[in-house]
Length: 437
Image (tube, rainbow, N blue to C red; front, side, top):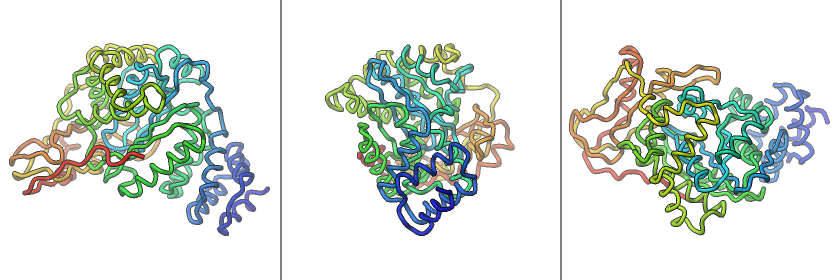
């Protein structure tokens, strides 16, 4: 069947058959469909829509466009977590070693940051020598030896998604639910999991700012997981303000190492709390605990007792990282950087600490990427001192920009100041978890 014929079906609003979707994905992978034909199909899907059956067929075709990991010889339940991304969203670095210490195998395939959202791979590369480009055999070996591995997507895992995502980004077809679901779930299903927890962010710093849209995405992801026989649950969590204390790769890695060492920094409680919640629910899904309360006790024991930290150190050794950073996380805090303080211009209560503005400011000074090929400065970032609901006096410290020089600070200081809103009246802090699906 020629590409033009398949495109015309969706262009005219008809439903695509499984065979037609298979033809499309095969053409994406083998190069028989040109970029402009793939783009035309994506736009037709975006404008005409996909049914639940079409979404399922697309996910299946993308999943089987490459290798599906077979980890059945590893005698542990296999589980992973996926986040839709946000500012200061760093929980993967805590969750993976905690779960591994609790007896779960975690084959975590992660991504890099783009725009105002951070990426797990960039944070891990803050540790000198840490290798996030593992081959499939290396990835499997690390999981077998320490219970978890963290690596980027190889060319063998859901290769169709890699090509489609690049063209979705170029053709403004990224924000369409069925395409988002197929993209996320094809990669996660390819990990050979028994259980999956999804952290779907909502708020101004999230991919989807509307609570309703975030909940709809959470339901669609969970339904797809269950349709493929995967134990799946989703949490809709807050991203109206940055998660935890720090934003920026070195800083976020420092925060996570401190949590794993049971030395949680001031203001990082939400990172620990959300990590614990996601871990506990995943332990129940994976059959390692009967209920969430029991699972939370398991997680707490691994964090406070050092088991999760020891597991992370072992993983760091296996993936080539400098374990001295684990023993002395302050090595990540580079000397000689310029610190610009953001202070309250009046007394009152913090009503907003807008994640989007804070994350965007970090990108502006080099801490993130506008384009996939951009290089990043791991050392720059932002310290969040005041949180929504906090009472402040005029002149109190709200946050600190950590950058290279005064010129960088001048470029974003006004934007950062405007990110904080002060109210005369008490403000209720936002819930960390808005909904469980």
